Length: 390
Image 1 (cartoon, rainbow, N blue to C red):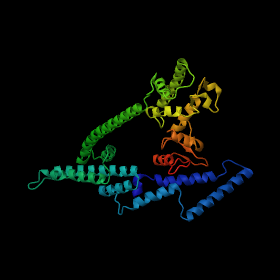
Image 2: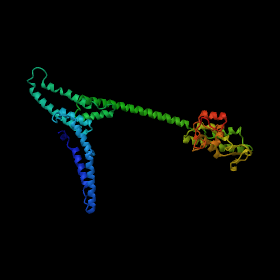
Image 3: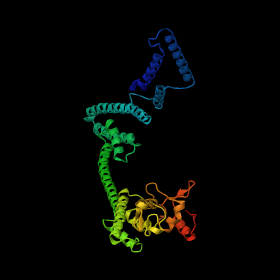
């Protein structure tokens, strides 16, 4: 009898599903062999369906109908004319996930309560004049307000009310059920206002903290990667290097020209590090420019001592290779996929061009990685070609 209160939509879904299945099994307007083939296919499908049913299988519509029926059956002695019984059915439907039907039952229970209350009120008012001692019938009717508050409390007792969204959802349930006049609903709305204000302030504070942290991080990164080799500083660095490594056989003008060429390259490389923001910052790279210049394949003050290389790089009695200079720094800083080979490891280590944890070393055979500070110190102390602790 309870299913009649909510329509027969789930049973109808089962019927519609059966009709669709049988319709698909028909010939569909086909004739001859095509119709026979189609019909046989439909027969096979029907046999499979009946077999599945016999083994306890259910279609989605049947499963939903079964679940709905089990919820209905969970309320014993259901009385559709009793508002309390309808209220109990509403709770069972809500717990079973049939929210529309639950709200329908809740509204029906509310309407029945209102009707009963009106009837009782009218009868009480008619008897008020005859009451001498004790509370009047209308005063007794006033106690239904407390009962409605209790019903409202019971309705939402298991619902979470922590966040503003949860509070709003519970308030919607009470309002839809006709309990907007209860103390519970009014308390929820006050709590909702307070919670929204708190969440707004909390969100604003969180946003402010995040923005402040982002600003600090941005400022730190900007400061870290700020260029340090301003115009002229690269030339000054090279002139200092030339005090102990002056190019042999060059006059003042040629020496200045070479210093200007190398210094300009250093300033350009410094700006590249600032833009790329890789493992090594411009400030960290300053100490490595002179170390790179100390390698003979990069700079050779005396042409007579130079072995190999492109003669076009020679400037009278000295030699400087801009390509070798950039490659050396890229290997040391692990830029552009560059790494230090096992053959160059000792040379780079002795020149101070190996950075623990950053410089990638390729020992061959797939043995590629970085070296620790302890491993590098041990390697240099042993003056060895192997990397202990690397």
